[in-house]
Image 1 (cartoon, rainbow, N blue to C red):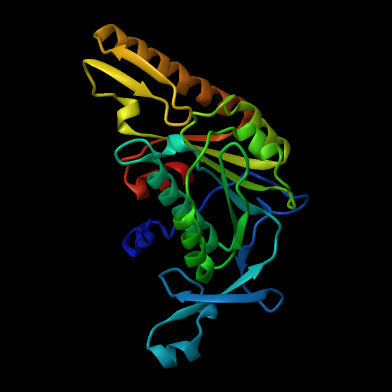
Image 2: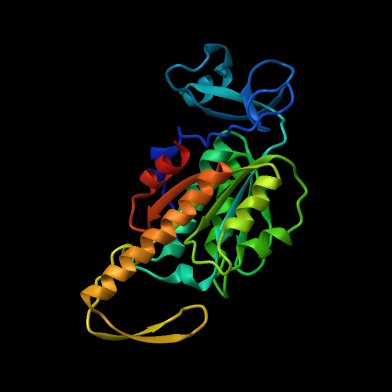
Length: 284
């Protein structure tokens, strides 16, 4: 499954994930920052764009390729970007399915992070953490991150609090991006609080399908829980739709208020939203 293409990458390559984290006596975030001068480590090249510092142009590369390239340098800081990807079975639902949308968003956020030389880790989870993949820290390593996302399989129930509480943390402050539908056993609140306790700048990306946001069903139905296989028989009526709409609004508002309370960036993203629009909503 090809989850992202070059045309999409071109549309998002100038974006960056913002963070308000501070180091003692340092600039915003524990991050790798692009810099110039002999005191920092050379990292990579990229094609020159208007506004770049002429002093960073590599004239040898221009002589070889007849194009202007600038040298990229990086100063080592200590903030990773962790992408916590919900891989429970409920993410398989919808047209388009939430799982594909979530993986595409994870790939896009990994891309804009490695472009600014952040260290990216991918942490798939359901009822427990399914591993830590990475770090991916340069544009050239992005293909490996995509390959990782493409081979991850969904399964099981979801319990975010247990998953993050039992994982091993080897890093300090950083950015944590949680991508989920929010249909999680025990809710998200305790897990999000734990991330804040771990000094993370947290982004919650809640992906729901169009069928969940505005169901288009009627008649007598047998509904099956995709994670537990529990079955409920219902007869769709206007009253039932009204109740569903009310409960959905309460569910979304509760998550939104939790995020506001703990200083967490929140974005509700329909699975049929264009990827570049998703990224803009998360990163802006």
